[in-house]
Image 1 (tube, one colour):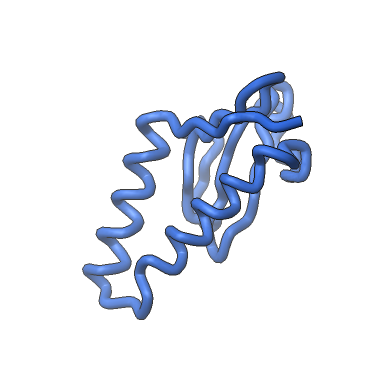
Image 2 (cartoon, rainbow, N blue to C red):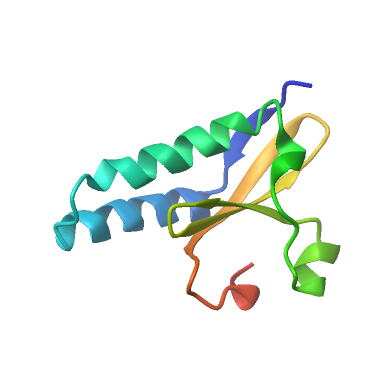
Length: 99
């Protein structure tokens, strides 16, 4: 089933902040991680169930799934016709309260 992928404003902001951070820290290839995140999100059009379910019972009950891309977690919810990307967070971050 083909679904459309939609980024919430907060997820778009997360991507902008990530790109700015990588450029500011002069990390080689700042676009690489962002490009991989965008490619992973696009792959959800056909395989929305492939993401892992969070261990956190609250997030699991809310229907979240996530993909691991480099050091980042892409949190999303799959609906019958769309996939909604909610947040993109560094994997070392405590994220339960951010979703």
